[in-house]
Image 1: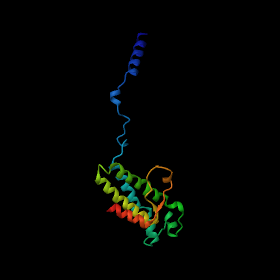
Image 2: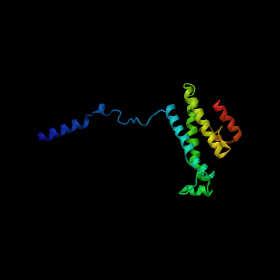
Image 3: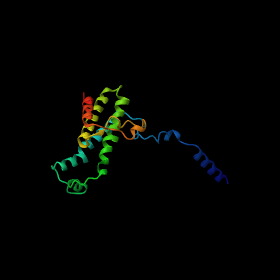
Image 4: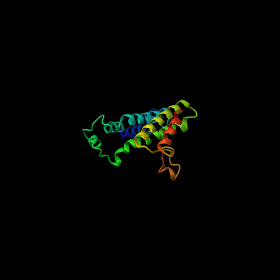
Length: 173
């Protein structure tokens, strides 16, 4: 009976005391930041720019200008001009969701305190919008990627390509 009491007391002490100081911060993930920095936003925007310049849009343009030929998988459809309306969905979202949203955030949130990031963001934005208007002509720009400011931004108006090229030149100036 005495042995059982010692075992119960030892178990009680073992399970009621803890080593909180040893496990503090175990759920803090250093790879999952809680606040965004302009460097993180710029990196994501640069990846969007690289994907736009070197991805599906570039391959499609080279096939249609007959520099390359589509011989396998989806490129066969591009080679025969069999492109459906949903085939550019990924490219559209890379330009707007991955690129323009992050770049607008850099300019509005960090531009006053850090003009270098603002300048880089404007150049990358001009490059993205230049490629987008070269590929698709009239595209949303002035009302695009402004967030949920109201009902009018769920379907932004398309800007004229000539007007958009002037806006791009304004960004670069």
